[in-house]
Image (cartoon, rainbow, N blue to C red):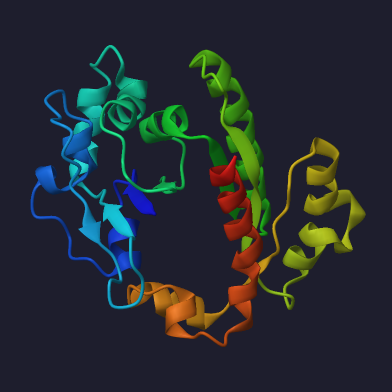
Length: 235
């Protein structure tokens, strides 16, 4: 598996425990540059725990890269072109995008086969999630993507049963029920990931939750997502 960081915030660097890149050539900026030679700047991740997992990092260098992408005739397709011209050896590639819609969403969408949307169960995030879905449907047509990447589903992160807004949005209030709305739209809702300090601590320490605290119940919530991704790869 390969993790691609399309996020200028560099969250992938934090979550993998890798050091911040020292220059643009060590990031996805190199892949999106006009003189990309097919050599992906990959870094091994958690080699003491898993094998075959690599990352191509994002970060602040991508801020300047976005300005360059806007001037390229195939700007939105640069990542897709690179993956076609210099295929990665990994069976699965996960592309991490920023939380707000920007240029890199187009770049990632053009290279993707499916999209997973992660939101928190609060009104603001849910509204943003539906706007993102609408953008995806429109962007697929505008970019003339064939085959068009499918919406794999929605994942709710940070659920707290003690909060009325969370409960209402997750079905307690039929008029605000997110599960009901997604069912009507034919969009998969993956098992809810409840809020836990263990998940935040694992991320802060650059480890997956399963490695940080293997017995944590929240680990089970990721199984359905992993299976759905693996099913895509099998197809």
